Length: 180
Image (cartoon, rainbow, N blue to C red):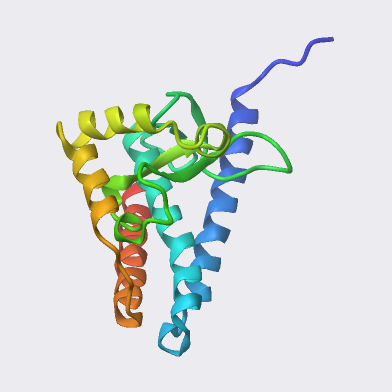
């Protein structure tokens, strides 16, 4: 006998996703309870999960007006905000200019929700991502990001990383309140 998808099954999945998301938010916030005591390397390690959560939350709200699913900026398909189970595609925070280029690593218009396949297997699909950025922020934005990434080297001081942690935590709290 074939199984049919019901509204209840969608609601259960959405609740499961929201529960997983709330756990990630709590874990990310708990990790950086006293950032002043952390080394530069540790601060960077703790900053990225917060940035990633914010980007995925921002883009899910922009594309679906929910925190459970969002649209990949490169393939245009919809995916859950967090990984469910051991396999399956989900959203990640993908960089247009690669994340090892520190000068643009935490710049919000360089990072967008991308599915695992586009971000990892297809190396970010830079040309499509560049078109997306230019469509969203204005023509030439992608080129400006590219120039910034290629010209500048950036070494973040601890106080800058702490400020970025505070900034993105505040942004997450605003989005969390906005969707409730």
